[in-house]
Image 1 (cartoon, rainbow, N blue to C red):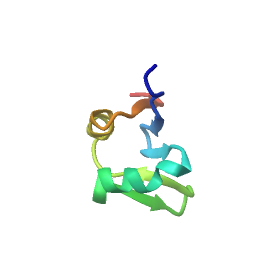
Image 2: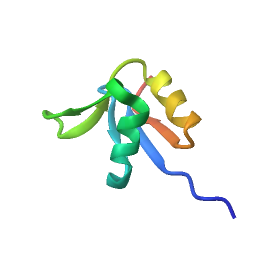
Image 3: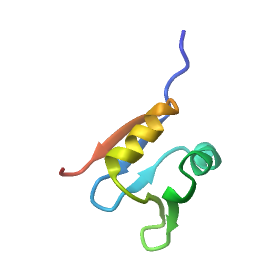
Length: 70
């Protein structure tokens, strides 16, 4: 049985990300300067193109869900 994929949700409009707290350090290593803590929304947010962020995370074995209008 394969290990269940960890889901990362990215909101298209403001690029805020939702993921398990246990993944924070791994995601910071993977995304380097492309992830930051947004004090206004009190969430992690990505920098750059949403599709690029999705591709990087999927290459590292995450399941990425994009929400909001295209």
